[in-house]
Length: 337
Ligand code: ASP
Image 1 (cartoon, rainbow, N blue to C red):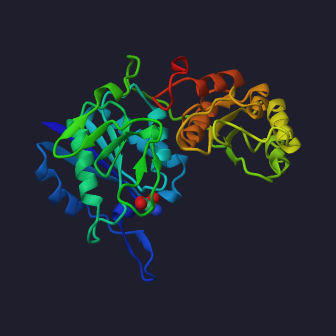
Image 2: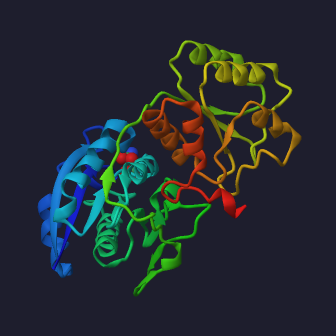
Image 3: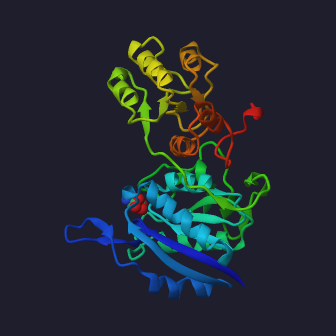
C-alpha cells in the first residue's frame, strides 16, 4: 500500500473570518480531513502541519522548510502533497523544483479559493485530486493541481483571484487532466538525467524585479546596484524582450550592472510567448550588455531561478550559464529554437 504525505502550510484552505470579517489562518481541520480523505484511497495518508500562514507572508526560508521536510521523509513516502496558499504558490513550486534534484516521486501543490469550512468550497475536491495524483500518477516532478488540472510547478501563474480555475501555465501544456478518469500526458512529463535524489537549497534573495514602463527613471535604481544590495536583476520587458533602448537611464543601469558583475535576466510582461533578444533592434542593447534571455520562463520562475543561481555560483559566467540551461523543465531547451 502506498504512503502519501500531506504537508500543510496554510493559505485560504485553512482560513476563517476573524472579528472584522477578514480571512485569517484558522484552526487547522486536520481531524476533519483525516476522517474524510483517507477512506477514499487505498493508501496510507499522513498529515503534518509545517506552517499555518497566508502565503503572502512566505519568504524563501519557507520554501527551504518544505524542501527539507520532503528530503527528510523522502524514503518514508511514495508521494507528497503540499497544501499552500495560492498567492505565492508559483514561487514555492519553482523553488522546490530547483531545490529537489532528480525527484523520483510526485510533489503536488494544491490549495483553494474558498476555505474548507465555507459552503461551495473547492478545498476538499482540490485536496482529493492532489492526493489522487500523488498516489496514482507517474509524475516525478513538482506539480500544481488546481481545479482538476495538473501543471508543471515551475510553469504556473496564478491568473484569477475569483474563479475556481485559478492557475494556468501559458507556455507549457498541462501534465494531467482529471475528468471521470485521470488522463496523464506522459510525453510532457519531466524526466531528469538519471542521478540520485538530492537537495540543494542554497539561494541569495537579493534579486530586484524591474518592470519596463514608459517614463520610469531607471537611474533611481542604479544606487542599489552600486551599493551591493542588489546581486541580480530581472528585467520584465515588453513583448519579446523589448526595452526603450534610447533611454540613457536604462543604459546607465545596464552599465552599472556590467561594471559590478550583477547578472540581468530578461523575461516578458506578456505571459505567453518567449523572449528573443535578436528580433528587434530595441532589444539589441540588452544583448550588447550581456543580458540573459529568460526565453519562455515565467516571471516567477525567472526570479527564483536567479536567486538559486546567485546562491550556487559566485562566478558571473556560471550564473548566466545556469540561467540559460533547462534545469527542471522551467524553460524550453535552447537547442529547440
Ligand atoms: N492569501 C491567500 C494565500 O495565498 C490566498 C489563497 O490561498 O487563495 O495564502
